[in-house]
Amino acid sequence: MLISGGETSVTVRGHGRGGRNAEYLLALAIALDGHPAIHAIACDTDGIDGTEDNAGALLRPDSLARARALGLDRRRCWTTMTAMAFSAPCATW
Image (tube, rainbow, N blue to C red; front, top):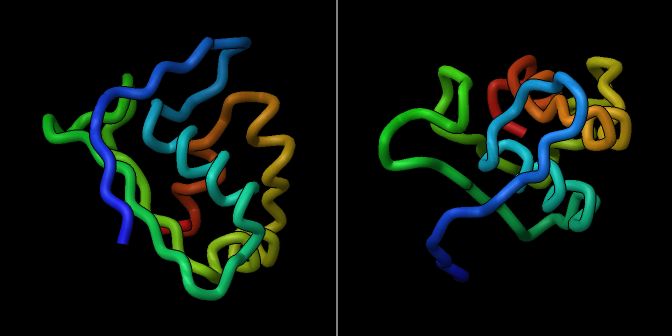
């Protein structure tokens, strides 16, 4: 188990929707590429991730496969800063 804390920072480009926690987990999902033994959560204690109405996101080993089945492109979501568009339809990643 790995536990970390602190605030991440994001350089905003374009008009995407996401929040720092969702962006962090999208980057982690891309890096892990469906690793079968890793789950992760990134959340905010105040209940808000940036300007969105969520407090973060949850990553599961099957998250990328589920997103792909919904037609979501992880790389496009990353480059357009739309982590929320990637995570919201899946409820969790």
